[in-house]
Image 1 (tube, rainbow, N blue to C red):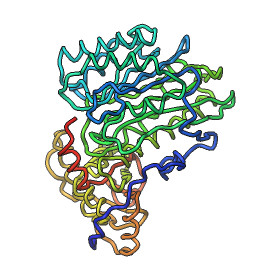
Image 2 (image 1 turned 120 degrees about the vertical axis):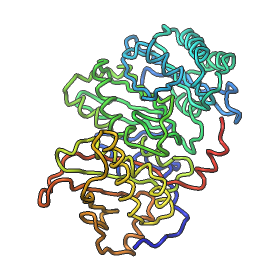
Image 3 (image 1 turned 180 degrees about the vertical axis):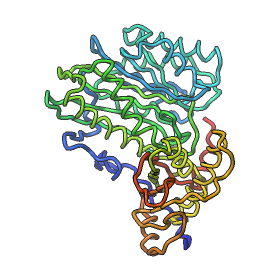
Image 4 (image 1 turned 90 degrees about the vertical axis):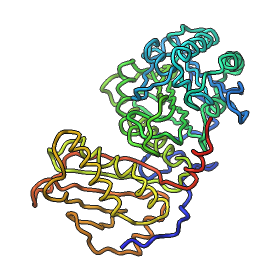
Length: 452
């Protein structure tokens, strides 16, 4: 039923020079969004820089500074749900005015996580230095770090880097800023967009990093978004929250939640276009932000350390089953080493999907105190790239050559429907999706060797 295919996976859809930003079929660009070149620079009111401070052995840029020059900027932020959040996350979340951030100090090469009181003190020192460099209050400077956990921050190097970055701040500094936040990323995740709103045109830009330790309850990466639209803090928070739920909360590379996840939206208002709550402007800007973050999230998965293929699993259930059931099932598929290994080799071994869901839901039921396995097996419908391979929990005949061709693609889609209602009741209730990458030899090699 599932003959093994060639073990060499197709290349993940990594960006090449001249390619459009929106490439995945799972993230469509709205008609009112126009892609600008990567050399278009930041939206009005923003400057950035990235410098080499010596935090990374590679000798590449590792300290980035992003500044909003607007008099009254607004912002919104989301952070990791980890119970062992890193010092920069703790400090930013507890001491910053998240609705009115004016600067971001970011670094790679050290996560400043699991560093105790010293880590918090070190973070505070760099925050104060960045505030002086940007000419703002420390409470208006967010911190973001990425790199090895348990290492102490090289504060002296950071302070020198901040001074260098201050001198290099410029409107097109997003190129260097992007380099300063990357670690094991194989390619940059950056975009510059123009958004046509009824009240006028505005800009959206983003810089994102992430390739491993990805399975967020929020977003296992760093992502910074800038717009020259004028938004209230409440509108910015609403849009970021909604769009994160449909993007970064929907991805997994290895089922591991990072200590440092941070996403920040900053709004300068430099365009003069004001986005009112519950307006057509808000709707269209939200659509653009949603598409931007979904494509970035898919790029994270495509850049999963050693990834060769990526997939999307959609899980549906009948009304009354609960969103937690479909979420548990979808995560089980996305994080299953067996499913991921089959995806890597182009093997249409859908039995691994059934196994992953069955095991996960049994554990879920026991955790909720619902006892052991149900008396009757769960009736699953499974389709791969639209080819149904299982109906009501039993295998059905399918075109094996067609399925083999389908799972050899760079993007593969799985659909699972859990029929928990009596026969004849086909109405669908809860539904969710998760994007995930395969499990390759390169992933094991990279993470066995990588310690910084």
